[in-house]
Amino acid sequence: MKKADLKSLDLAALWRGLTRPDPAGTDRVVPPTGFTAQLTVFSAAAMAFLAVFALALALATGRLAERWSTELAQTVTVRISAPDDQIDEQTVTVMEALKTTPGIAEARLLPDDEVERLLEPWFGPDVPVEALPVPRLIEITEAADGFDAAALRLRLQGEAPGAVLDDHTRWRQPLVSAANRLRVLGLVSLLLIGAASGAMITLAAKAALAANGQVIRVLRLIGARDITIATAFVRRFTRRAAMGAAGGTALGMGAIWALPSMDQAGSFLTGLGFQGWGWLWPLLIPPVAAAIGFVATRWAALKMLREVR
Image (cartoon, rainbow, N blue to C red; front, side):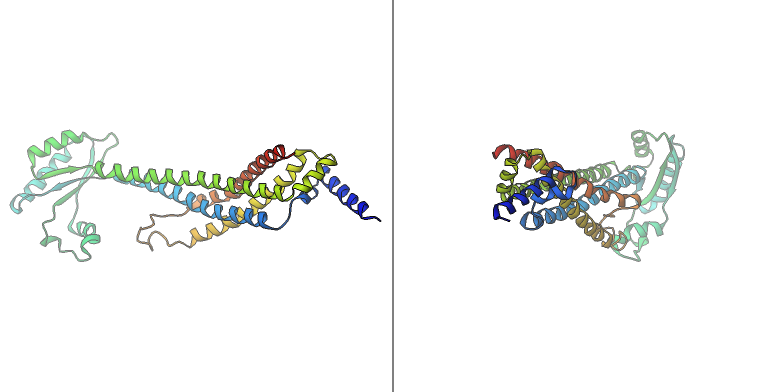
């Protein structure tokens, strides 16, 4: 058989692969290995790894904001700072005022051992509370309808000048705002990671198309349509993106699982990670990566095929 006949047979076999529904046939025009394959798999894996941490940050800061908002909103205290000969009397006066204030379900004077535990992070264990000028602390539990804080402050100023009502609003707002901003930052990071993945897959697809330019021209000569040629690249690059993302997601989840717990880290990490059903969220990353690969490759292939005639 002549050399020309061999070439014709190869092209005919390739055309049959392109026109039949078997995906393995359409993949023949895409190089199975090489720079584009490695770039696609590596970039998808790296972006998926980073996406796991961005997702963990968004979920953890969301839980943190909710916890801070709930805990600090329910924390209302009265501090009593007065001379030694007046502090007992003012404490009794404040307790009586709180018991008769509408909207307060309970008022409890914190004992010395609880005050000692509150001061322990700053002064260490065995804090000599009785030897320090520590104010008396009264913990207030609000009723369902709440109470009038402004009216209570005025009443305490008149009956117990050394008493100060602290509803922790000025502490709560900055903390909750910071946590919410961190959550938004995590979500924005996820969007940027997706955009970067799409850009890198687009570049890889264009490089593969450019490397197979001569094959594409021959396929056009024997009747292949642009959509048929593009389908070959879309299938191959979508599969590569999904495989790389699956590996990166597995590595990211393993890294999150290996992080120290909140107790071991001394609350420094504020519970960074996934909890309960939250571990299912990262499993959405490979399908999303495959979708990004599909859209990016299809757009790049059709655009480049229209430009190159």
